[in-house]
Image (cartoon, rainbow, N blue to C red; front, side, top):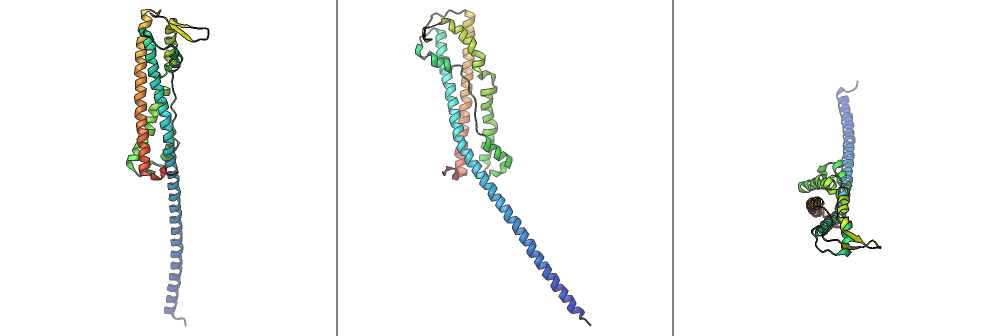
Length: 243
């Protein structure tokens, strides 16, 4: 007759064996998930690091582009002053006319590299652990860059060529004498224009002054923000400085 106690012990031993094997399997699966999760986090961090370095490098290009536009607005302001002198009847360098004619009404486009920021946005801003750096990024890319785009492409006051070039030149052109080579050789003084035309030009030039100065201030502030963000990126992620 089988020993009942012996069967119980055997069953317990078998159950313990199966339980131990199950624990090994579960633990193995758990370790596999942990390893996979860790690998994904490493891959994501590597991807974020590459994105951060790309942002750091592209900010240098953005700063350069913004400084070119800033200089363009400053040159435009100088050229507006050239035409104001003509309006006042003051002497100007005739050989500088072509340059100022090109610059005074020139408009610009704003080009920024935002792909890295959009990548970070898609991953979630929490991938940037430094609060200050995160806020700087959002402020620059979501606000400052949008302002730059708007003042150059959507702000009607900045469309100087489209709005003001033709009426200004049609009035001032009455006073200009060109030679057979199309070079300016004389500006009549006093200008052969009416008081209404002179008043119109005064008001337009005053407005253009304000527009150029406003755009200059916007660019100066944006460039300051770009440089500050780039400096902070290098501080938080020093690996961006390595080649």
